[in-house]
Length: 242
Ligand code: OAD
Image (cartoon, rainbow, N blue to C red; front, side, top):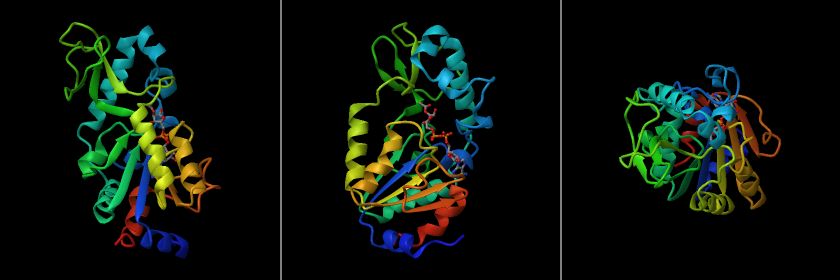
């Protein structure tokens, strides 16, 4: 794959880098993406399960889905793409990773300056007290799991129809406005507000690079779009981040 002169120049001259990731960055580690055939679980789409309404109607079903995802993710490791993003954080003094992923693989790869826009699958939240706790039990002994106070626990994940934590979204907008380089990796760019961040970066003068297995709604808007696997393309870019 040929990396354009413009991309190389933008990477080499960048001082303030933002990376926005979606499920595609973890696909090569073995985490199923949400959209497309492999996103289905017992014939349900994420939009049918990741909602407060679905949880209210059938908490056991929703928890079974998360338990399945947790069991699946538990033995997995960061791939070459995650590793490049962790090394970019080391190389650039101003850096922010904004991830829609809840799998924790960026942290395993070593990223420290990150925002988890949609929460984390390894945390639970009490439906009564709102207390957030790390919970690594996999498989879960009891579904749905219960808090010490007796109330039901829910996954600490932002579901469709729920608001993102104000701090997370504010700091993400701010990072998008201030960066001079944004890399958008492995997201279908259809879920808001994450999908609006590349446009904000572009409008405020950043060079925006997309890396995705296929074209997305933002492909025409970005400065350069590289079609292929994140685990193969990111390593080609790494050397320019010195
Ligand atoms: P999606 O499943 O919608 O999109 C994954 C994207 O990754 C697609 O555009 C694929 O083309 C691309 N892709 C797949 N394999 C790839 C690879 N090896 N390298 C590069 N790209 C690859 O996932 P998201 O955009 O993350 O929310 O979805 C956004 C949100 O919707 C998720 O956070 C989740 C979901 O429902 C919640 O669960 C709340």
